[in-house]
Amino acid sequence: MTQTPSSTSPSGKGLSNKAIARIFTVPGQVVSVLVLVMPLLVALYMSFTDWSPTRGSLFDAFFVGFENYSELLVYDTRFIYAVIRTFLISSVCLCLEFTFGLGLAVLFMRKFRGKSVLFSAFLTPMMILPVVVGYIFWMLFQSNGPINQMLEFCFGAEAAMEWFKHAPTAIFAVIITEVWHWTPLFFLILLSGLNSVPENPVRAAVILGANPRQVFWRVVMPTLKPVIIVAFVIRAMEVIKLFDEVYMLTRGGPGSSTETISLYIYKLAFNDFQLAYGAAAAFLVLVGSLLLVHMLLAPVRDQLLEGDN
Image (cartoon, rainbow, N blue to C red; front, side, top):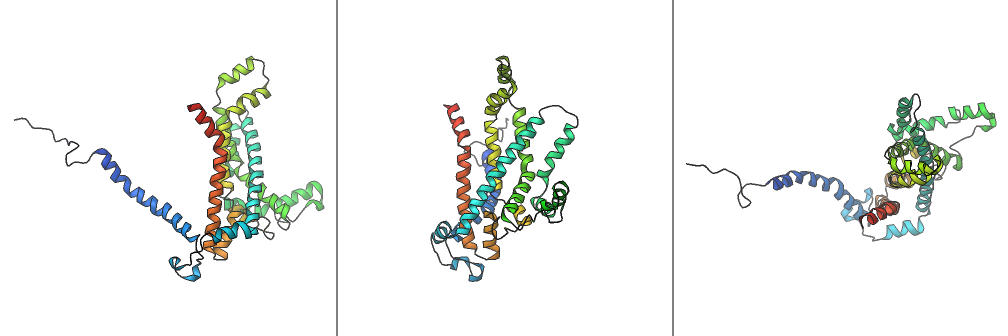
């Protein structure tokens, strides 16, 4: 007698591989919903109420609609100034980080002695925790710290200054700290982009008589455009959340002259216990960040769509 194989048909009782795979992905999906989606929905609901921890349950809070949002956008000048200040600091930091990162990337395209050691050294700041970076620069910018001592040695005693007692110098200290910390990220991304530039267009430009400067600006830089935009998007998303360095350096002072949007929301939630108001501010920042990323990615997205057509 011949025995039939025990394979299962689509109409049989056995489960297919796709069904088994779906079953195994269910726990991960449930955890993702609980960890990511549910807190987001709770915070969104909270932003439409007047709830605070001293008023009992969240679900007993009074529903105020868009009152928190209108208060932030129309009457809360501290929030508006924090947004403007964050945008200005972010713009300066991004421009400086891109300039220094591009210069280092071009430098490391050449061969020189000690290149591997310097490469590791230049990437080290990016690997340090932001809180540690903030504390290090807080010590460096003290009135009797190394920076003032160096200024006194080079330019005299009158060159030393109180960095954290005046708004311009405090903002300048924040920018220096942020640029030192995150320039290596631009350097790493741009160096990878330069190494991936195809050789044929460069050789063709050289044969046609282009000098090195023309080759760089008219051949290499247009090729790097998607890489540059991705680098700006990654850093823009991070620098908008600037908190650790500012908190360690100035706590937002003097006054509120260095208060970023993240630090302002932190003070609303954990110092003033206005959690609903802080949640509304956080969602406004979220919407603004999404719009900013959408605008930054528009050139690359349009280029890809045109290529598909």
